[in-house]
Image (cartoon, rainbow, N blue to C red; front, side, top):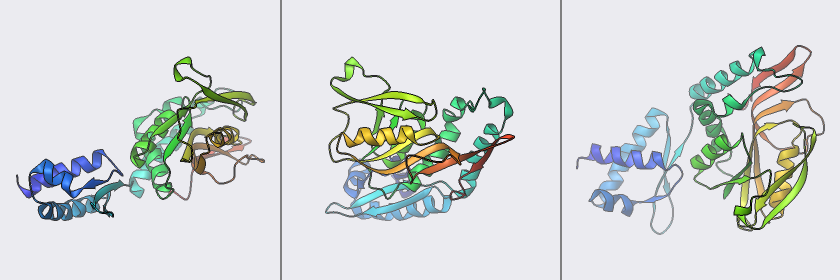
Length: 266
């Protein structure tokens, strides 16, 4: 097999499994060549990935040694995906009455979802989180993409307990989006005690849901190392959490909502 052919296979394997450690021995056995040849192949892969702006290939430490692919989104790609979301949110027809905006189609749009997930993955890359946590239903898509990019599991909290999940823990929390007390439930088997979690949600008004999830995770001896929300309503006093990372920010004005992309992103 030629070096360029091996490099293509290595690139595909790394890109399909972001943030997963691969030993040189794995590639050597799979491709039937020496580790020294793999090392030379990786120089070619690293150069190509960097030149294309896809991310970077980094060496991992340890007795076995190896590599991992860390994807990132370029500023141009980020602006394109998020400006598309911004333009769609600015459409007056999305107002469904009161203070509510229709966002379901945005959150399940693959391009927008990937753009948001890449931003979350980049922002929380150094958090050393073990899991990504969200609550059903609309935030699941973005949270799943984020978990995949970080190569960690996704845990989904339910609104109601399910018999199929065995023993559960349930708590009540105040949701600012619905302006009422709601309930969330999680199986006792879902999380290992002592884990570190990133919480991702689709929409945040006063942070009640995110705070509820944090309280729930406290029952599992799990530390929250980051909060992320796709859409955040700005200007509301008394937010229940202080340190969060938004993608899109909405400001309520007399003429409706003003939509802006988080300036820390662009």
